[in-house]
Image (tube, rainbow, N blue to C red):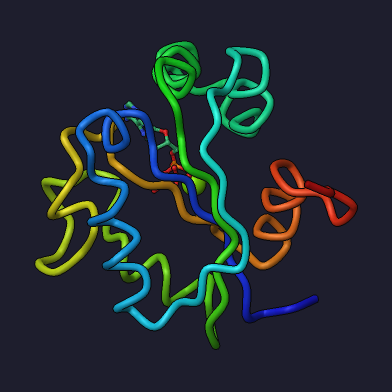
Length: 139
Ligand code: ATP
Ligand code: MG
């Protein structure tokens, strides 16, 4: 399994407030190469499927509503040690606990509307990238 790729989404709060460019800049300045990129509006069904691991958590219904409330930007990123280094770049889930210099410290509004997603393992990076990007897309 590759260890040099991760998957991210710029979440609806950040796309709606015109932070796509700022966040992509922080990602590139952090040493990540953007391998694949697209902006899409998730249906509640697709958002629910993406976050299915959290379906027993009390915040799941709100999370699904929030993640389908506006467009997201999905991207596959490449760098050595991508998964761990990207979690460091985005900062803690709760922006109140996010370190200075992190994407969530700069852009997140709350523990739910926290600007970006980052995969938590190489296995999930692969699964999540495949959820949005297929190898045989032609334009
Ligand atoms: P992500 O998976 O989006 O990168 P994370 O790994 O930091 O975030 P998770 O525990 O996987 O955090 O939670 C997934 C998402 O669910 C969070 O990013 C946030 O949007 C939302 N969430 C997590 N905990 C809470 C909570 N206590 N209240 C409301 N929303 C929450
Ligand atoms: Mg997570």
